[in-house]
Length: 500
Ligand code: HEM
Image (cartoon, rainbow, N blue to C red):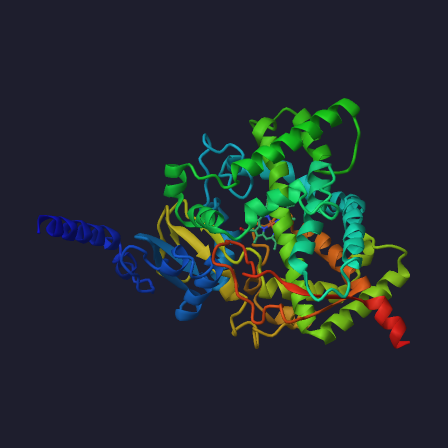
């Protein structure tokens, strides 16, 4: 009896504690979604029933207003739907939202806490300025030969798998993207196409494979910072950062000894290291390592997913695939090889990749931390200091207000005429403002170069294993299909010669 009373008191206290802030949004006259005790509005995400992106998309659909409130456990968070207000938060009033919500414990995790995605101000501003020159068009252009090597190896790898009943396209794209990034960021060959158990590929899987540990890591970093500090959870798994750290320093030491130049990120980092203090920050040690690691982590999953989702849509939409292949072949006839200029002149390819990033924005939401009380323009709503702000990009990209028949894959949405009809902030796959994706140009060019290599030689066809409709993994904070993206590859040149 006493135990029952004791348990009842504990349950009652837990209930009271978990619901104590549930009046927060009503008091401020902000529309909100009804929360449940303990979980707030995050039950489906915290129990791995839905991915973060999909859950925010569902919420987006439920509330018609421009802004609404939710709770993660008992902590109030704000979600912004309106493109004009999104522009204010990301760009115009950036000074109120200059950090993300994600944060790492500097002492426990000196690598993660120095990557731009996690770093906070004032250090973020200094490091972002230092790293910007690594991403100019000139620098990216000089890395094209490194990307092309990976493209050639990918074609040879697919040649050996042509006409097999099923091939995992996501794995091929992941091997390509890993080889591109290891070459451009670490100055070494990833050899993912030569060795099925290549270490770099393994490290990438450890970071992004949708599993329980990575699911907990993603949810904690984006929504439960207290847990990150309490349990010393690392954004980058320790085996991943240790391996990349070791490769980084051995490459740096070799370059310093041999004075070899390779037009890659290591060259840029060496130059920054030699400059000593910049704006009070010394570019050395874990700060330097973190920049190369960030290139790897932010670059390979985003690029490979965008490539694989494009192949997926092309195998479901044959006429779009044929049209794209004919553009690729006609442009390549004029250029002897796949150059930067050749890729940039492929206008239909640009529309296709843009439509992929609308339907499948790899990072399907943006987050910012409000650092001073802020009155949302045109409303009476005050976002209080310390309130996390979320922008549900996945919801925005499927909103019928901006996209007719949003489930349809239609690259013509990105004709100049259609673009001009839309609010610019209805489409934000790379984020926006000072915290936007620093690797946008690099990501786009390596995605396109990979696709050009594949589609110039092969056709992709759906088979019985291709997931229709697609189901997203709830254990990944980036968009990922639960069962990968299997399909069939056919040699398009051989088919063309048979047809002739
Ligand atoms: C298709 C490819 C890619 C997509 C869709 C993508 C998407 C994004 C998005 C949505 C953000 C958050 C932006 C914001 O909060 O406003 C971001 C940030 C970032 N991305 Fe990318 N990304 C891609 C490729 C890359 C590549 C190739 C690199 C590096 C080589 C990279 C490095 C970064 C970094 C460092 C940040 C944090 C920037 C900062 O906070 O200062 N990304 N990316």
